[in-house]
Length: 166
Image 1: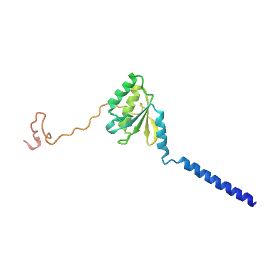
Image 2: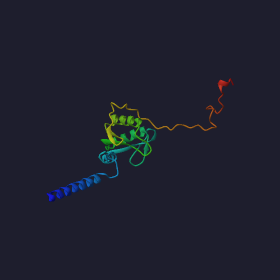
Image 3: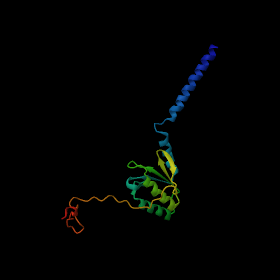
């Protein structure tokens, strides 16, 4: 009997050690969602990153406006290199916003590609019928007026303040 109890004790200790090793092997320091998203990028024909102001960043680091991205897809179609699947991921400077999704929905409609986006580690497909496809447009930074141009007309004369009765 004593021999059976020590054998059982050794088996329990060995199974605990084996399960601890298995659990330690599964943990790589990354969250499962990040690892899955990184592995999924290899299965897409083209990966585009969302950038500030509704712009997009290509693999080579080129930042394109929405209309330029559409032109890029037209070029790929003309050269016979149109991707079948596209992945939209957040960049270091911007997360995937509604504006990005609407532009990509337009590209999906125009070129017949399947577009997926990374939503906090979970991949979701953009459905052009559910997402309001937005017309592609150029990026225009807000114009800043210098102090000397403030309150001047196009002819260069001062604009009179009509509220003061001048």
